Amino acid sequence: MVVPFLSLYLTEDLGFTLTHVGWIMTAFGLGSVCGAWIGGKLTNRFGFYKIMFWSLFVSGFMFVGLQFIQTFVGLCIGVFFLMLVADTFRPALFVAVAAYCKPENRTRSVTLIRLAINLGFSLGPAAAGAIIYSMSYTGLFWIDGITCVVAALLFVYLLNERKKGNEVKAEEVGVKGSPYKDKAYLVFLGALLIIGFTFLQYFSTIPLYYNDVHHLPEDQIGWLMSLNGIVIFLIEMPLVAFFENERFSKFRILAISTFLIALSFFVLNITESFGVLVAGMIFMTFGEMLNFPFLNSFAMSRAAKFNNQGEYMALFTMAFSISHIFAHNSGMQLIDGVGYEMTWYIMGGLLLVSILFFVWLRNIVKAESS
Image (cartoon, rainbow, N blue to C red; front, side, top):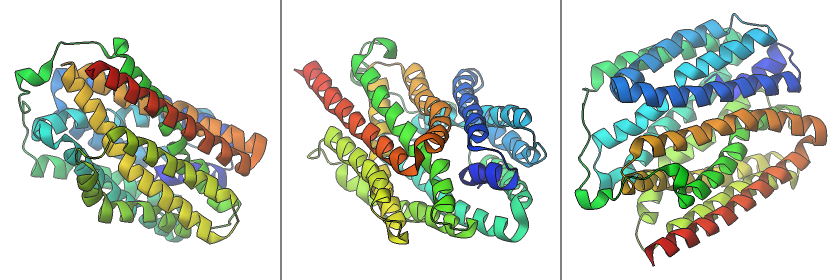
């Protein structure tokens, strides 16, 4: 609940400039990268179960404590350590997928996890907007922190620990390789970095755009952002199940879905009516529903092919975290320098470049199999 409104909280409630907010969000990204790296190391040593529990439990208290920090340097440090703890959860989550599902169910398993996340995200911003409107940001930090602690306790109560995952068949393993020498995977990561960079604008600059240009209050911003989670909850599972069929090219799905996300930015410059905000959110949502599950699936299948799940999935997780470092700050600086309209054109243009990366990736994979 806090993250979608963090940029608004920093500008509206604490009075920071966009430049300051950009650097605080860079600290957010740095903490995310460090958390993903440390999370991978800790998961290898202690297992995914303990890391997932302690990440949720400790970050709950840290969310509550963040409200008491109001200086620029203090917030940079506080946000960095909050994300460091919170994002140790993500590598552990990928290992948990391998432990609790069969290899042939990976795409749908990841989609089901995303469904749970997006159901929370559909309710979170709407609830957050209502909380801010009625109780101020103080109530938001308390409630978000408490829900993290409750989630940790429910995690232990409802889920039994599993030490090992489903064994991968020998013929599926292949020769162990390094992702740093895998040309296809490096091209894939390049596309992922661009997509992450642009998509993360929906967590920082887009809420500011809703407020500054369209003058929407926090509760309406919350409901608009919740539209994303509601549509994903209702449609994503059957949509992914339909396109998971072998008759559909996975690379074509990735290219088309990336184009839909690009349209979500371009459409914002057509007019200043509220309808384009809804259209932009719909384009982004359908793009996200098709893009992210198949991105996850490609990474997991590549990791299985080269029998190196740890390094491959750590890089996958860290690529998105690295986007956090640059996305929020660059978005703020672009808005401050060239305005919202040109910023949206730049974001859409970058996504068109990432489509070329998927074309390149398809050609590399085809050459491998020939």
